[in-house]
Image (cartoon, rainbow, N blue to C red; front, side, top):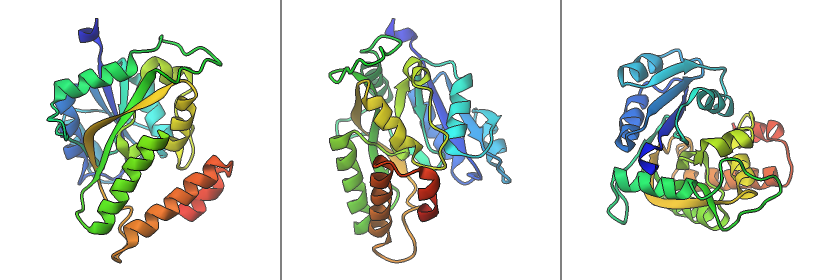
Amino acid sequence: MKNKISLSVIVPAINEEENIRSCIESAKRLDPLEIIVVDGGSIDRTREIALNAGAVVINSPKGRGIQMNRGASISKGDILLFLHADSIFNCHSRANGNPKAIFTEMLDSCWSLPSTPIRGRNDKKNYIGGFFRLKFDDDSISTRFVEAFANLRAKLFLLPYGDQAIFIKKDIFEAIGGFREYPFLEDIDMAVRLRRLGRLKYLPYSVTASSRRIKKGFYFSPIVVSLRNVLLAILFLLGVSPFRLIKLYK
């Protein structure tokens, strides 16, 4: 049965012509059934490059949650993996990983629950999806510190960010209504809702993400930006609307 289980990789993108080919080529290492690039209105060559790289490309209104939901709605795979367009999926790990081993672990992480979660049932002992080890494309000490903190936080609290390539069984994704279409923090919200149904499994294989959003031109900017993001996440978890918090994020 397991050899028939398929993977769909969904990539939300907008104006990512410099990164989209590398992202798609890295996702191909998992031998997915399909790679769906959901374009949110690019004015550069993102769509053309993605098509030439072998991805399915569809249009969507701008917004990461909106785009990922749109991609999921046409996907055919049994497992959905959401990969940011400025990230690269690596097939190496601290444990000599390879694509087949990674996919096997993803299956083990997603196939321990029935297709449809039971309302009110809290299967904390079971895995319903997972995420990967975050790595940034920058070797500065401050960036490495942020990287280590992010991985520790995600492992301890099972609250990964979206750039850790969250993957979920499609039936469960549909049962909980997909991503909330927030301006940001849709990844934290998804993780919180999934935790009510079961556990997310941390896999040690790395996803290399762009550090451009945490580098602001001074040496300790990755740490400062990371602390701001943690504060925003805490406020969100305490009930503050992401539509208010987005003003502090930009």
